[in-house]
Length: 318
Length: 293
Image (cartoon, rainbow over all chains, first blue to last red; front, side, top):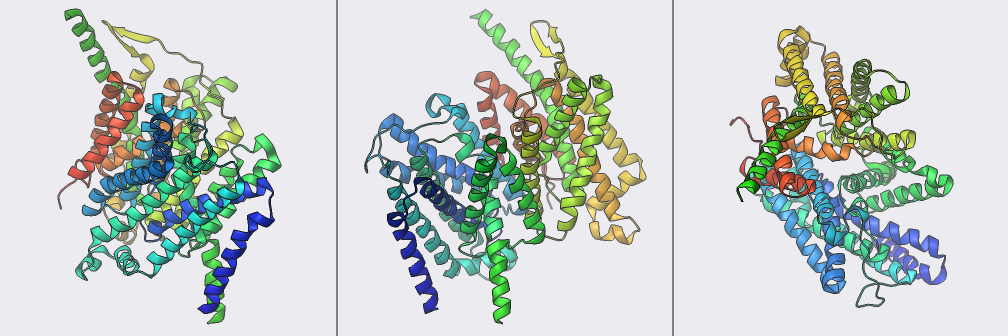
């Protein structure tokens, strides 16, 4: 166990030191993207691993990103306040949708479709309020450098912020992994009635995990917005984004803490390689490969790449 | 003031009737999805994308190869039916014993595949048949002829499915499987074959919807997103697998969209429909017309 902590510490130290040694802006940009999306995918998998498959996370991400940007652009409220407000709203939204679902035992297919509706709502609201949000053309936060605006030109700063957020995501993941909530949630995903009979408060446990997941996803959206300085309904909300989260988490592996990160590395590198290799001709190809991989993974490797590798290693040891 | 009210009423009536006409096609889509769900217990997240492929099929046959609309339509229906069967054979069948959520996500992968295939193969331009049907003027109200045609064709399609399900042996077997999937294989019904036929039938309904929608809307790779989510909502609201519920819910939704769009932008019609859906989930979580058990 100690060697494991040591490995984590060394890995983290290397990651922190990296931008001070290696300064290629393009590669740092890719790393920042990977870290931010890893955080988003980790947030999704916190509830996804317990069979609570949500396609509403695109919605939470959109709320986080748009609330932060709108408060900044229209009311000049700093993202330091805007981000918590965005997270809070996403959390409220999550509770409004999740409470009836859990209270009335809407699970499986139904839950997926209800959350899918949520993504749809957020996307449509953003498009419909185009006077403020810019509609499908997207939105750019007003330029103003500095800590107050949470806007930096320096890639190193962003890398460190993204790294911090990513580590927070992993810490939360591990915290859930070791908590009583995990046992409760696993019992619930096996059999809700039996779990309830054993004294698990099914609705409350599910709501807790959903709330944590939604708050983190909204944060990911806001950070993404501050970094990219451009958001559009297609990039931070809607069903495509939700499916992308599911895809990355499943490809990497749902049941291990670094799985979603591996998923993010694979998907973002794949998209970048295709983009560089084929240029504008690549439009569509990356999603074609994603889709194909998603189907193949679900059929042949439901535990994901990292999950399957770790399982092999464990079998060998035993 | 009186004149203003007159106009308002006519607009209102026009919106109500347009809503009913829109409901026809939505009901057709909901029927296809419900059929798949009721019999195979799988949700095809990519259902609207099958429709999109069908619309492209129509576009190519009519615009590029110059076939008349009436000749192209059966081919498009067959094409999507074949796609439906293929989808079942390649993706669903290996996952029949997997958790339902995995099946759903796999069809989500197919959604990506179909969308990006269309982007790669057909480009992102908006395309249409170039057929513009006349607008029907009825008093002071205007209805597009294509909507009326779609409504009628959708009704005919639904009646045909109803007759197939009630009057033929295969249809009876399909309904029986929907009730109890274990016992039917003991009764000598080939479940695999029934599943394939059901998938093809679901595909054919998507194909029919494609032929009708292509008359009203331009086709582009992401067209599925504009009516896919609404179809799922309709099915959930009506109770997944509940044919009558889906039928009625389709018209309820179409009216909300149409009337909501009358007072504001069309997007707000959709937002209203979504909001209605969430409220209904509080009140009737198992669907509008759930039978109490």
